[in-house]
Image 1 (cartoon, rainbow, N blue to C red):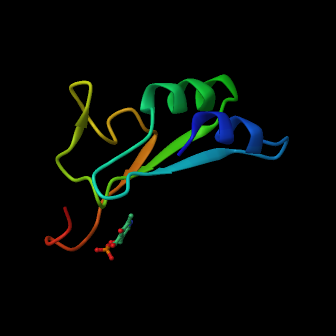
Image 2: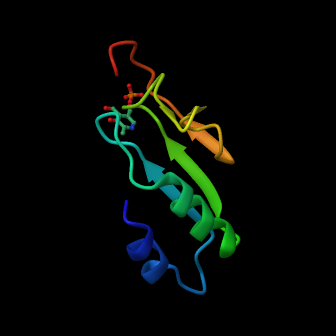
Image 3: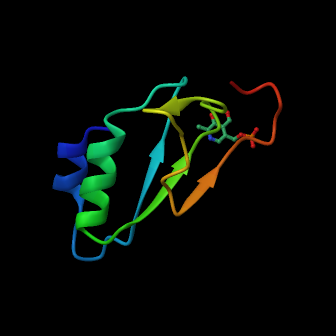
Length: 76
Ligand SMILES: Cc1ncc(COP(=O)(O)O)c(C=O)c1O
């Protein structure tokens, strides 16, 4: 997810942002969190494809209000 694109898409009715980490990769999580918090958005992270991965020493999902992981043990 591109933080600049996120900022462009935030509107007056926006309540939350769902960040999906695809194939174990993510965009600039620090900037995504900064933009989200600046607009008082809840941060949801889908880490189904990034179980066990970390960003700057923090497990992905640790900074979110809510995180989701896959129910299947075969997911990455
Ligand atoms: C990004 C993402 N979120 C959620 C899911 C759902 O995972 P599950 O059906 O194992 O709960 C998947 C499954 O591939 C996924 O890729």
